[in-house]
Amino acid sequence: MRRRIIVVTAVHAPSAPFLADAYESLRRQVLPPGWEWRWLIQEDGTSDRVAPHVPDDERVSFRQGRPGGPGVARTMALARADGEYVKILDADDQLTPGALARDLAALEGDRTIGWATSRALDLLPDGSTAGFPGDPEHGPVERGTVLDHWARHDYRAPVHPATLFVRRELLVALGGWMALPASEDTGLLLALDSVARGWFSSEVGLLYRKWEGQATGQSAHVDTGERAARMAVVEARARALADLGWHFRPGTD
Image 1 (spheres, rainbow, N blue to C red):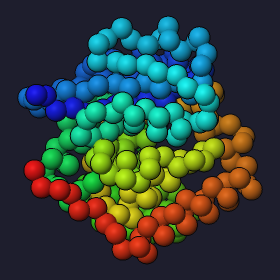
Image 2 (cartoon, rainbow, N blue to C red):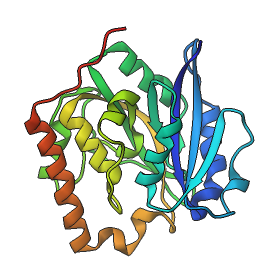
Image 3 (cartoon, one colour):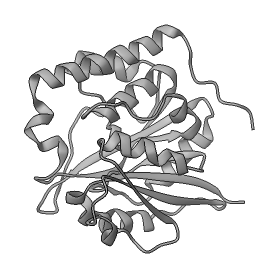
Image 4 (cartoon, rainbow, N blue to C red):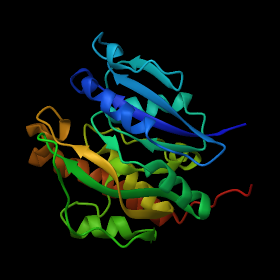
């Protein structure tokens, strides 16, 4: 029986036209023998504007649900996630060639690592890309590293949550994504960092699309009061998990 990586994508109507590019980036992924991917697309809502953009591929499944934000959509998709690993892919982003195989190698190679991230480049409207300095060293990310950096750098994590690859059992144990209007992926990243060692790949694994309709570009995303509240609950959860003293101990094969 083939082993699976489950790729989870939340989508709403404005971002649906980008699904074709995300799909092409998935089709270019080459996995080791015995592995396959499945793509779970979950609409944040019940419009008739997303389904026409869903690829006709037996490896792709599509569901809808009442709107609640991308974190709710992704968490609902976990109900049909039947693989050992979950990879996040936002509807408007693209994986680079080899991204899935590199993530898989990191976690298959060290059972004490619960999650992986990689370098990301901004994909600009003109098709060019832009990177930024300050990535961590290639290799393991010890528990608490992300939270410490985030707290000392105006709530900016040293790794990009949109590149996350995680063991399904760990993701489910933490309850999926946080119930926040934004930063739900950062909340999950910091929770993972509090209970499990991670991995960072210095090779570019994601093209993070910049466009006028993306949620992180809207004024509400940077509202001072809301941002402060989001960051407070994200930090409180991560520190509470760390204080509990529980950490990820994978089962034996």
